[in-house]
Image 1 (cartoon, rainbow, N blue to C red):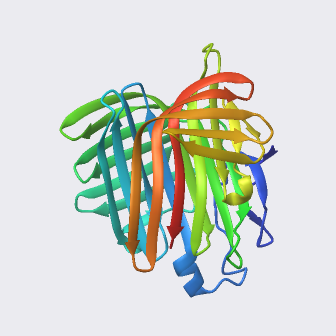
Image 2: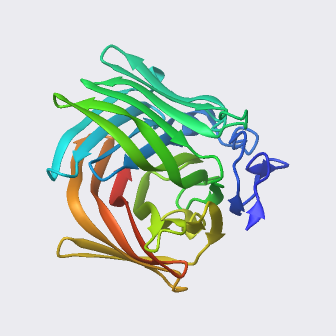
Length: 327
């Protein structure tokens, strides 16, 4: 896998492909490539998504700038009780959210309205290494979050992907697994401490009016405990260019992925045989929203992943997702 350049374009043209590392700036040069102001306003999307798991709980959320509107959500899942304690979201004017085109430093994403103040920020680590720590802080509809994702030693995978159905379409995405997560969560009248693993997804693109994908991401360890292992796989979106596995923080590209969803279990496999993993579903987030020009339909199970990844017997935690967005 090639080292990521500083930006996803050169001479105003996208550098399509898969890379190890991160762009410091995801400016897609849309105006310079002839994409008009109106099309940029309604079709340029960006988001920062996060999730974290330990044996007791899972927590996740995202701040999404979807052009003419913003969407923010937070969920908390009590793994011991098998209960989704919180699954809250807010649809707001896009002026009330921000997602930076510079995902490796400073405030990456935030919403700041009464009762919904959430910020995702990148900071240097304890030894001064740039962007090795991501913090999620704030309060969202009664849920308090204070989480630190330590990513030092884990190389992200960044992909620049063509977008079918959108002239000039391009999407830059950065995926990270096996972050070390520590923090506190207050939700549903309970206080939780989390010490576990985390997954991150930053994306910025000029996307199609209708976007579909199947997706899976997981972080954990080899069953012998000698290596951290993670994976990120998608089908139906991004040409599979973001498909990757990680072993002890080092990424490797893998081939196309197929998904099988039945009888309360999700299975994902790569054509190259590098990944064959099953998600034992502990809980499911689901939504079917239609508010005129905007619609979203998804099923996102959370739970325990087991299987083989990069030659290792693997066990970990994460999510899968089947998603249709019309935006």
